[in-house]
Image (cartoon, rainbow, N blue to C red; front, side, top):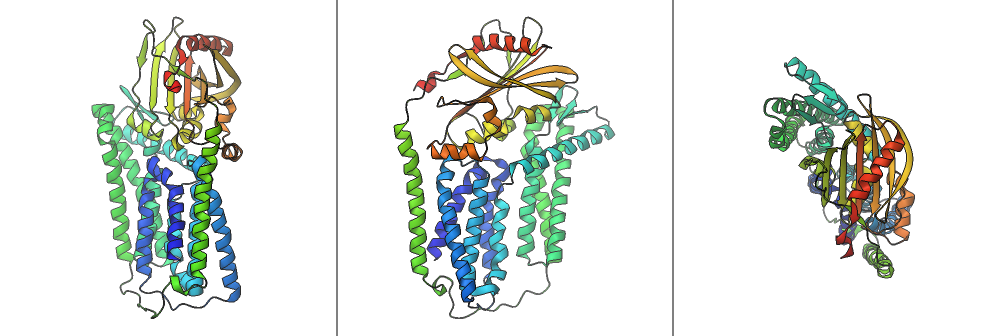
Length: 509
């Protein structure tokens, strides 16, 4: 049975790994399995005497194991095609924890289930939060963090203005991005507080106090960090922010963790719990039919892994060659285009596209333009970044733009390519800003403009049934200040596309 548990958690870690590895916000997740093992090892010496579960309880536990094993096996093809889907690691973690608790119950009954429940369920703190709730909390934190920084800068005698999640200071704009919102330190400190509370075996009220202390320390420390970065930008420009950005973040996490650790140590019981070591009992060999169950689980998981890979390879072998795809050409002489460097922190949030371009220019009519072009290679980062992370309604809203209304979709034709755009009318301090946003897949499959923001469960399962995975994606977005009429903006956008859209030679290779 120990081998079956190892296989179960290998599949769970496989489902969670991409989010931990690619998203810095959840990089702390790699520590959670180690902490879970540490907390389980501290629970083992004082485990209670095992109790044989009732026949009915054993039947329920066995049925639960069968159901969750089937769910975990069925999830493996979804991991291949939709590694970025937040539902995948959540379901996998629930299955892993439920299967482990069922094994614990069969081995030692309710006394063991109660004793080992927390270390097993602790793994769930590494599960990514649902994206709508996470975005809402992040937006709230960024907005209030920006407001607090601006107010503190005024008290310190610096000129500053809040523009959405940006702080306008003389000579530069300081962005309070996702990494500076405080949600990363908040999530990390929730993990730290729960782990320390369990490590010192605190009572429930004391654990709640410790958790609240950790949350408060994370939020307060992040506000101090944002103010420090703002003051550094006022004194030495935005370059100083880049130099101390990561260091201040680590300092906040270390300081908040030290506060929680000290508080946990002070609240810890003065005497250690009595240790009872049941003799003659071992977890794997006490469960009825453990060898048969282990063999069945291993066979099921192997079939799910091999079958899922075979499904996608079969479809990929039958797929026709993708048609040529477009890219954005370098600016021509006389275009008056200025390249705008994209900060490393922004690329970090966008999960590192292999192509990232940003340009600004002013045309013959005096209209101001800005464009973005990103490409993500095939892999789980493409869907998450293009469809979810880079949404102009979120990005421009964070920069202080006000969305007035969405405009009708528009499919542009440029040099033989059809590019579907979503269009928006924003206001920037009262001035109209027309925004064009397109997401196109590398394999040339139709990508409706509105699909970029409705990439729901139906679309993901259609990809699964069609055997499509790891598609590369590209995003083209540009905005123009000046035209009052959407038709004028569309005509100007068409002219720009005719000049800049060309065939991507790399897609032919």
